[in-house]
Each structure stands twice: as structure tokens, then as C-alpha cells.
Image (cartoon, rainbow, N blue to C red; front, side):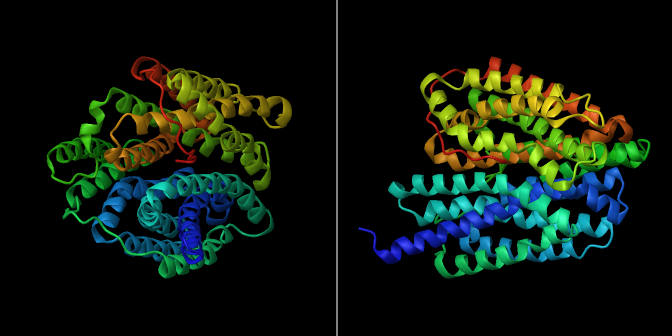
Length: 457
């Protein structure tokens, strides 16, 4: 029987994991909303704005699987505390940035330390709660994560309307201090008892590959496809191939390629890449376009996509239950189709367009599509592997979603900065349509268990 002290301890541990992972999520939401203000204040061009987003996504995407491994090997509490301290310091550097280069550098640092926090939160829950209490704890963690994605744009819009963009980074500091105290006081240290090695070669190859591809896509149009940008792009692809070869041969890989032998796992991850890449590209361009062309305030832009987050938060569990009963396949076909149609209706937005008649219908279709997808997709990934591989499978799927956002945001300048918005919407809608096709042909319609809903990959 749990004592009052045990209950109190578990409550504080849960608060520490919720705070840590929510900070990483909220930061991404707020920064996307703040890009027009940052660009105006720091005289940043479109490529700079891409790097401010992608510098963070680059380091986070490349190292998130390594971050989980480091916690298993070195100690989950220790690595989580390092992540918190580093994220706090890098947030302060972001707030103090006086030019685009400094801000990009600080954002890369944020991503590095964020890669220690994201996998660390669930790992701490997994080792701090008994099996019978673990599911409920993860459910609370997921629910509060959903709330953070609702609060993020509203909080960001409010801050940006009353203060400078520097404050969107400064608000991290008190949250991190509180989280650090809770973790240091209440979380017990735990690590994997089996000896393992750190996949340093895999981490280096993944980082360099993504850096080369990102540099080539962002700087290529700006530099008229100079030799350096083409070389970086090709080099990134070559290094990515070497990364896959390394993962197939190393003893303790960051990515267990054997998981992809499951057709549902491979299909779900390809669908994740397409749909979450579409989501990242669309939200990036849409948020900037609302503020620069339709003259929305920051808080109005934050509120504009609120139906999407509210829909996911309140209806995904019901869709998850239906997918558990009838199978996920048709939800993963219809959902991306609705997302594609919703995006396509917003491609011709002009200044003066009414939110109610010109924007909201597309946003509601987009929202309905994401509601259909989020829970069944997570369930499909988890059901396609054995229980002992569930943590690795979740980490791979999380990394895939972040890599897709990184690559697609980097690619948005390919049609020229004057055409970014229509190109972004057309590209994103096309990718969502492809995601529906992938689901139709690759996902087997077998009933799956409904997971706790985790949004905002």
C-alpha cells in the first residue's frame, strides 16, 4: 500500500517530467510565432528565420535518440539535470542575442540539451512508477503535454503583444529552476544494468548528414546554388547512407533497423515523415504569412490555429477508442486527406480575408484530419513491435517526425522568398495526400490498443 510520502513523491516526479518536456514543446510553439518580430528587430532575412527554427530542430532531431541512450547508460536523473541546466543557459543566450548568428547558435544549443530532456521524461516515469501505476502516470503526462500545446501559442502571443521577443526565452528560466529542484530532490537515479556502448559514430554521422542537407536546402537558393551548397547537399545524402550502414552493423545502434521489417512500422514512419513534415512546413509559413501579409497581431496568429490543438486534445482519445475497435488504417487514410483539403483551401489567402469565411473552414478540416491521425498513428507504431521494443520504437517515430519538420522547413525557400507561402501550402498539401496513399497501401487494418494521446511530436 502506498504511503502518503510515496504519493507525494510520485506527484513531484510527475510534475518534474511534465515541466521538462513541456518547456521544450512550448519553446518551439512560441518561437515560430515570434519569427516576424525577431526578423524585424535583428534585421534577419528569410534564410536566417529558417535557421532560427531549423538550428533547434537540427540538433534536437539528430541527437534525440542518443539522448535516450545516454540516460540509459550514464543515469537518467543525471542526464535529465544536465539537459535542464543546459536548456536554461541556452535560453538565456537566446534572450541576450543581438544578431541572427548568435540566436541561431543559441538555438542549436537549446536543441542539444532538449534532446536530453524529451526522452528523459518518459524514461524517468518508466523507472519511478510501478507497472500498475505507470499507465496512469503516462496518461497524466500526456494530458498536461496537450494542455501545454494549447497554452503555448496563447502565452507567446500575449508576451509578444506586450513585450519584446526576448521575453519568450526568459520565461523558460523560472520553469527550469523549479523543474531542476523537483528532479534533484525527488527523482532517484537509475540506469540500464546491462553494459552498453554509446553510438558516437552514429550520432556524428546523423548530425553531419542532417546539417549538410539543411545547409544545402536553406543556403542553396540564397547563394544561387553555389558549389559549396551543392557539395553540402550531396555530402549530407552520402553521410546519411553511411549512417544507415553504421546502424546496421554496430552493436548498440541509435536506430534499430530491424524494426523496419514490420510493414506497419515502416508504413507508419513513412506516413509520419510525410504528414508531420507537411504540418511543420504549413504552420511555419502560415504563422508568418498571417502577421506579415494579413497584419494579424501575434496573439491573433496564435489563436488562429487553436481549433487544431483543441480538437486533438479533446477528441483524439475517442478516435483512439474507435481505432482500437475497428483498426487504424482508414483513420490514417481519411485523416491526411482532410488535412490536405484543409491546407489547399488556404493557398489563396489575400490581405483583408475574413477569418470566419476564408480561414476557419480550412482550419476545421485540417483539425478534423489531425484528430483522425494522432492517436491511431501512435497506436499503430506501438502495436507493430514487441513490448520490449516499445521505447525504441517510440523514440524512432519521434525522431522521424522532427527530422521531417527540419527538412521541409529548410526546403521552403526553393521557390524563392516571394513565393514561400503558396509553395509551402502546395508542398504541404501534396505531402499530406501522399501520406494518405502510403497509409492505404502499407498499413494493415488490424485492431490496435488505444494509447495515451501525445501531441506535438
